Amino acid sequence: MGANCVFCAPSPQTSTVQVVVIFSGKRKCGKDYVTGKLVEQLGASTAEIGRLSAPLKKAYAEENGLDYKKLLSDGPYKEKFRKKMIVWGEERRNKDPGFFARKVFNGAQKPVLIISDARRPTDLEYFQRSDVDYKIVTVRVEASEETRKKRNWVFTDGVDNVESECGLDGREWDFNIQNDENPKVPLQTHLDKLILAIRGNIKEA
Image (cartoon, rainbow, N blue to C red):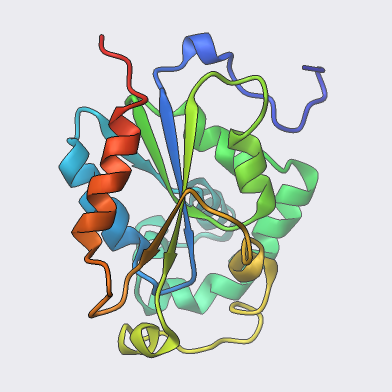
């Protein structure tokens, strides 16, 4: 791997991560809820959530004198700055595509790292590099527009029709979870299958 590689990361031998579970989905589809349930059932000693948006929001808050904790919330404060953060984040990614993913991966301390908010092809590409020895599991969470509206989703131009929301549409995923109020397949059924796949790739200490 060259010194100028945009996806540079520590060698796999120095990482505790054995499985990276990458979640993608539209706003208000319930990614945080599903990933929270997954960590709860895998156990806090085994799994942790890594949000690619966290280092973005932290750096953006520091540069602009904003409240980082409020930017992490799901309320109106974050929505007020969402468009500007998207533009700022794209500018940073154009300079260094692996910037945010690398920060999250380098900070991981558990065998299972759950990326709860993959949004762009480069997010997947960082973790799917050929120089790693952890296993990858990809998950797409879907919900109907009707369900998302009940969760206070409102279409916003410049947010819902840009790469950060649409960049991973149409891809194939290892698991697809329909997270509506009354899905044909219960969420727990999806989680049971997902947990089985994850545990099958964890090496015993």
